Length: 537
Image (cartoon, rainbow, N blue to C red; front, side, top):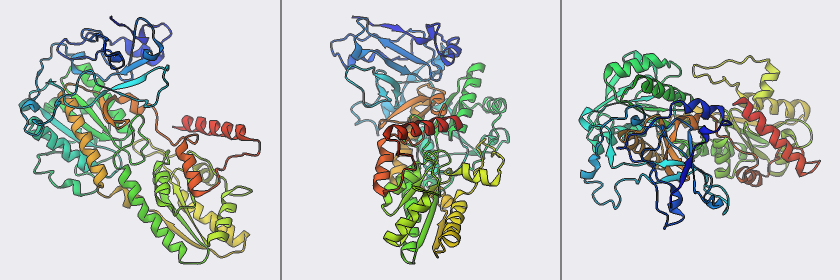
C-alpha cells in the first residue's frame, strides 16, 4: 500500500507565509536520506515509502502533510515542519561516512545514528481520532555527513543578554566538534555580531575552553544589535568559515535566519545552527530554555532573604523583583518552589491596587493574619500603570526591546504611601532586586547537562548538512526546528492553563479578575488579556 503526499502550498488558498516560500521548492539530493511516512509507527504491516526524490526544499515553517489514501482519521493531519539542508541549493554536494563510526565513545551504543524516520511530536497529548499534528526531525548524529573534518572551519558567537550556561554551550560545541568529529579549526567571534566585521576572533581548543563552564557570563563577550547581514556573510566567506554556531535569544535567532538566507542566496556551503538562549524561558516550541532552572534556583535565595527579613519585624512587607520582560515564568516557578510567597505578579496577568479584591486589600489581610507578606514581581508586570503615571515615552535598546521602567521601586513606594498616608499604619518595607546576581552565575548541574545536549545536537546537525535550524527539547526529545518557528511568537504564561491555577491555589492570592458575573465573565476577561498580550509581542 502506498501513500500519497499533498502539500498545502499547492492550494490556491494557502497562507501568505507558505505561498511566499513555495517558489523556492526544489529537488533534494538522492544522497540525503529523507523521512518516510510515519504511518508505519501505527501500522507495522504498512510498507513505508521514502521521501527520496520528493521535491521538498525546506523553508522555515514549511509544513509537509502526509495522508493515507484511505483517509483514515487516526492517521490524518501528520505535518513535518522540516529544516533546510545544504543539498537544497547544492544538489551535488558529496557526503561522507560519519567519523563517529570509529569513535570509542559510541562503540558500545546500540544505535549510534538517528534513523531518518525519527520525528518528535510537538503535541504530546492527542485524541484517538484526532489529527496527529506537527512534528520535527529528531536531533542526533546521522550516518552520513557533508563535511570532511579536516576541512571544517567553525565559528561560535554569543549575542544579547547574559544567561547561566552560555559558557557550557561554548565549551561543549568546541569539545563536541573536536572529540567526536576531529575538527581542530574553531574560531570564537568576540563581542556579538559586531565581532564578525570588527575582526575580533579567538582560536578555540578544548584546552582553551576547559574550565569556562565554571564561570558566569560569556567567555566570548557579547553585545546587543550590530547585525549587518551582508558584512557578516562577507566575513564568513572571506575567512573560509563553513559552520556558524549562534547562541542568543529571539532577536539573535532572527539574525541567524537572515544569515542562513544570505548564505543560501550566495550558494555557500555554510551550515548555520542556532542555540536559543533566554533566561525568561519565552522561546516558543521548546520545553524550556537553558539557564532557566538555574535562575529559578537562584531566585530562591532572594525570596528566602525577603521572607527572613519581613518575618523578623512587625508589619514586614517584602518585594522581590525577578526577570520577566513579557513572560512571568521565572516568577511563577520561583513562587511555586518557594512556598514563602504570598502574591506573584506577572506581565500576563494585570492587577489593580485599590478597591475590593485589589492588591492593597490583600496585603492588609495578610498582615493581619501573619504579620508579614512577601510579593514576587516580574519586571514586566504593571508597566501600563507606571507609564501612565509618568507619561513615559517608548525607548528601545540596541536589540529593539522596549526599555522597562522599574516596577519594583514604583510598587514599593505605592504600598508605602497607602499604609502611611491612607491607613496611618507603620510598615517595614524590604525591597530586593537580584536581577544581575541571578543571570551572572554559572549554570547548575541540571542546566549543565541540558547545555551539553544542546551543543552536541547542534554539532551533529551542522555536520549532517542541516542549516537554518535551531535545537531544543520538544516533549523531552531534542529536535531540529526551523528558526522561524521559534521567532514567530514568544512563549507566555497562559492564564487559562493549570499551572497558573496551581499558583493561585498555592498562594491563595486574588486572580484580579471580575467573577461577580459568573465564570463566563472571567473567561471573557482572560481572552481579552491574552489577545492584548499577543498584540504587544
